[in-house]
Length: 341
Image (cartoon, rainbow, N blue to C red; front, side, top):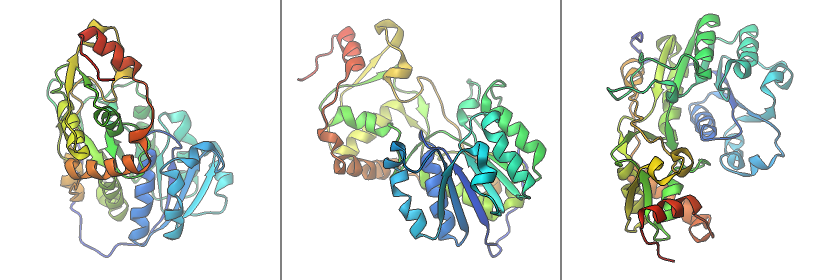
């Protein structure tokens, strides 16, 4: 269930917003886009990234583009969320987004500090991966979740200590600055003329969103805290794509043909989680709450967005980089599918 509060068209109040950002994985891009979106709307933004500024991780996107946040008027700091009070001593915020923790032990120090400092609104990036598999896709807000998932404990805790809170459950995402291989996995094979091995039938549905859509949804929650408060939002695009469809769209973006090969992971003796970047099942959520409550509209356009990603893929020279495809080779050998050398 979610609570519907009509969003009024009023002049946006300028807020002071803190983003506690992960230093790894696909979620890092959410904080980057969110910070830029808020700055563009005139809000004050501080991004606190886990770890140290001098670490090798900061040489990769989106962290190596944090100058865009600074040039936009934002502030970037680094540190341990457990020591957030020391890292941000004396700072005041109206809203905090935790885009880092996956369990209560990690998020509690941030949430408790925010509560003690009088932060009015707390937002948490959870995951659509906590939904239990369903025979009636897509997943919608209110569907049953895995009780033992770490994110679930965090969602419960913040709902108990904050008067104004919102939870966002993303799936897969793309966008300039992403550092998690999803579409690149397909590009790696397509540009080298290799078959693309997809587990199962290839008709499994998933959801891939551009990071700008995730950040716009989050920004609406900051602009309209009374509407967003007490709600869980599937932070996803409003269209699904099949796994075969993703391969075809990546090939279209690359301007290359594609050969798709289907296989049964058990029959060929591989772990699908290691062999393929997406879940080997229907994994598809819809953003119903965001549309109804916040008036959010998605802009993800996979054919066009993948062209942007392929241009970046070529720009960094990944299309020419030597690569090994040992798991692929095992699959293709079991299927007796030839590979051009």
